Length: 402
Image (cartoon, rainbow, N blue to C red; front, side, top):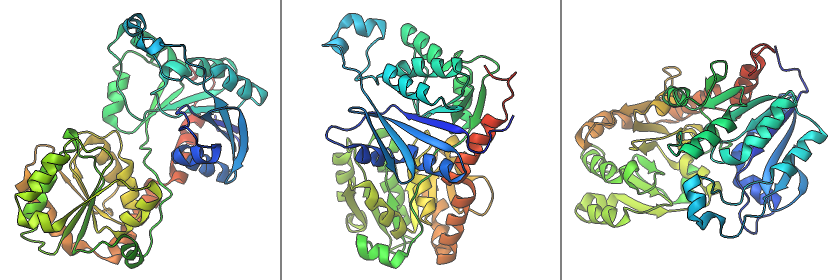
């Protein structure tokens, strides 16, 4: 069964608005959902993006019909009750599913897609309604694991049972969810990294004028300074690299900084690091486009990634990449041989990482930047993602539906 041109598609983002944001700012904050909606509109589908918000509001934003639906009023002290915690019932400001279902019922979609499963306790009513209304239902995995709490496991299973297709960023996570016992045999899984971006390849010279970055090469990390991102290993590796790249500069962007004292201490131990590493901290997301366009190399030493959006942003802006060989990253970077990405083992030490990265400098060029961008367009763009989602849902026959 194929999805007809002009079919009605409902995208649901249950991540709630930030206090004080209007619907436009909320939609911009959750840009991934809106960008995918725009790609589906460009393919000829009638798309409505339903966004959890402070109240009822509807607005056309960049060609997409965006419908804000309210949050339910949280019960007083509910999340603090020990009985609530023991029963696994706590949830902060759940979306008003009744209001959302009313919106959906007024113009029943043929496809309903829910972003993420972090609000799995909340979206059960919506996906159940959609299945009973004859919709094809899909959900995307943006992180999290099957709960061990017996009540939460039961609620998680009930929420996911209505899903026809479950999109997940890597084969590793597909196996995890498939083995959770939450899904029936006929429910489908599709590996689909959701790491796209609207960032564009731009002039590196102009970008560096904006960011003030210098270096030969310019290396950028956007990993938080926390244990699983291994910032000390990154610094140790870069310290080794400076023996081969004496003019290199490393710029660290982060929002969480649990290990900032350790990072500063490690930098103070090396005169090379002290002069070659800049702690940039956090900047607004729209400023990161210039950061990635300034970069020659994107560096990531994490031990776990669901599917790093930062890697997609770096590739979109033409950066060469050096990353831990995690399953989600391998899935992103091994579509063909055109992309330039050094993958090092999770067990690799600083010496091994530096040895693998050292030859990268000779590949830095404008031609390489264009090749990275072409790879992004071919495999990771929102257009590719939208086509893959519709194709997978369209492959379902009426007999194959859950």
